[in-house]
Length: 142
Image 1: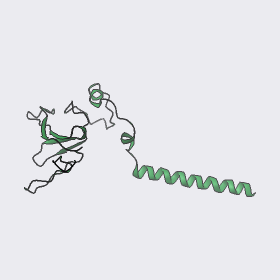
Image 2: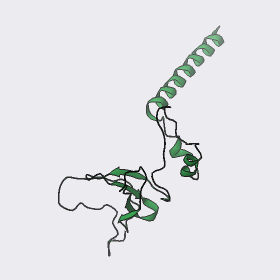
Image 3: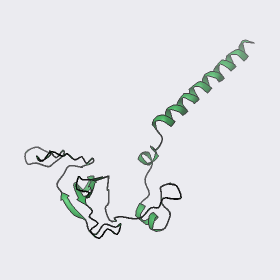
């Protein structure tokens, strides 16, 4: 009798813990797989082949805007509408203008170079020059 009660209690405890772990994962960790597992070696190649690594509704489409930006990390639009991309391994931020509005970058313009692994991009309406976090400066050891 005591053995069955103990087994039932342990089973109930296991179900409660499994439920909690599942809810925790669902609320906090969904979408973390790309950060843990290696990404596709060339996402642009997959898009060109029609094998996008992304899942999206059928009414959406994926097109290649720019190629040849190894290690691109963050994409943001500045207040004037220019698309900027941080490239941490290269230590730079580039702009990707689409002058003819055909949905493809016409060229890659280096905006800032010599940075120490830039990741995020932020903009301000303040006309004073912003501070550059991670900027390599003589005598600072960055």
